[in-house]
Image 1 (cartoon, rainbow, N blue to C red):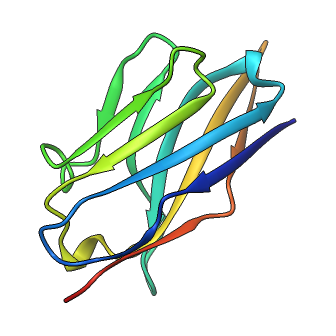
Image 2: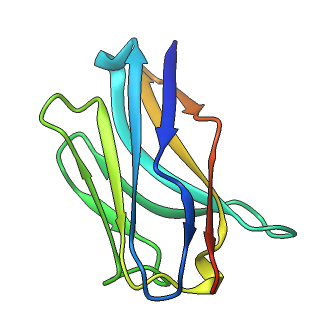
Length: 119
């Protein structure tokens, strides 16, 4: 089992910045990748960015160049630095962790943190 706790959401004006954090605990040794998804009202959950054990990063096209995903040296905390925020970035942001155990892949989710971009 892996537990994920997110923090750092809030209200920010367009053009502003926020940093989200996600701390993993529990059976973290099996984590292969961690990432961020978001879900706006009436829309499906979408991938924002992820980073795997080897350090490879993947970004959605809509955030490339504005958002940066990183992790700490222990690999149990992942961050999402969000710059030049736009109203369309408003959503609940969820952290996820993908755990590999042999052929089995399990995804764990955090509780979500609200990001609102508005003047």
